[in-house]
Amino acid sequence: MNGAVYFRNNLSVGLNAYVSGGFYTTGSITSTVSTLRPAGASGVVYKIGAVNGTSTLTANYAAANLLASGDTWTEASSGNHPLIATAAILEPRVISGAATVGDTAALYVEDENASTTVSGGNWALWVDNGKSRFDGNVLIGSNLNAPVGILDVNAPQGNSGAGTRFVIGNDGNVGVNTTAPANNLNIVGDFNATAKGFFGGDLNITSGPNRGVSIAADMNRICLPSDCSGFKIDANADTLTIG
Image (cartoon, rainbow, N blue to C red; front, side, top):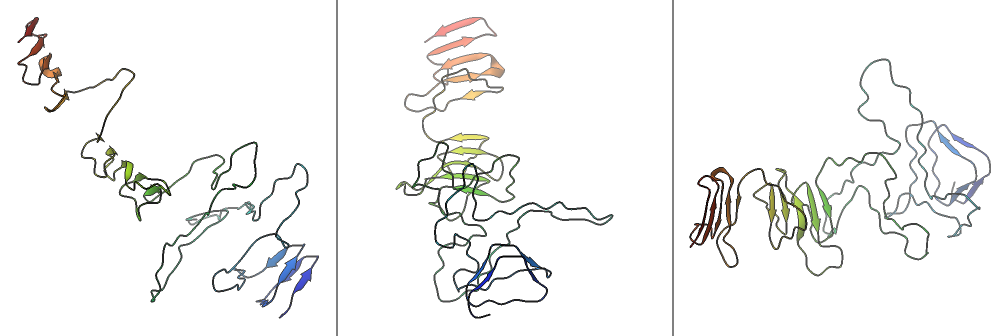
């Protein structure tokens, strides 16, 4: 078919069907083969949208350009089902050439709605409920090409100060303003606590400007500075020493 074809009832395709022009139907399309593959332009294979660019909503109706309705599946009596999903997206396959490729993505969500005032929120991606699973590392922010840990919170898009703000490393260590936390929690910069802090072990503050407190829990003492030359409370000896 080389022109536009209009169907207002169901269309059943038992073999391959190729349409080089427009294809429009107000009914449903059923294919008895395993795949339905529209052949689009070189940049877009399948485009979904309103015929005339805009559609008018009926009162109290939800709207979506694409609705993947979950089927009810009956498991086999034996064997193993690796995955059951309403929609599955596989990785893109790019053959190297002379062009420069900016980024690739199995799923790309461009932006949230910004042209209409709504009573709720505008979201580019919304997971309504349930659990979400990410088997790979996650990068939040777009000033890096790849995350440096399990979770990498980077400078947001358009921010001039590129760099990791917060990271959970592959070893589980957490870093703030550092990409390589050496401890369970590694903070580079100021730290402010407005509530109580609890430490199960020693709290050691290294010497330096405006520093020099040593709390040694195993020896039951508090010293100022860390060598105890200025102020010391020693619980073992029940003494308070100044100077």
